Length: 122
Image 1 (cartoon, rainbow, N blue to C red):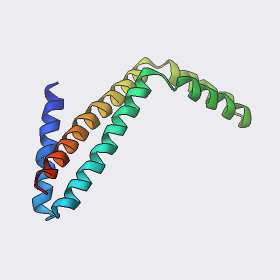
Image 2 (cartoon, helix red, strand yellow; image 1 turned 60 degrees about the horizontal axis):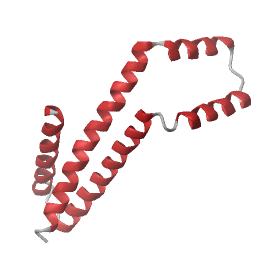
Image 3 (cartoon, one colour; image 1 turned 30 degrees about the vertical axis):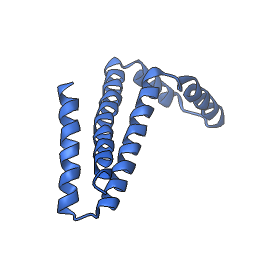
């Protein structure tokens, strides 16, 4: 929680600093912060959907289709099963997705807040 709020405030400070250091016009700056904030919030939503496993049946289906179209060697199949059974790798993937989601949520929310506050100065 502490890291997310720190990232939130750092992103706000970075946008304000970018406004004055790069000498954006106010309208361009508000549009840029809004668009980037929206993209980051979409990325956060995608990571939440990936964590819930909602798209897992689709991914498994595409893997099945790909395996029927392209033959894999036995060595490649052994490596795939080894990687699927590796708990450390799966934990690393989950932690990375969670970190990306939380970071993009905090930064995106900060960017949207900056753009909304910037609208009042137009």
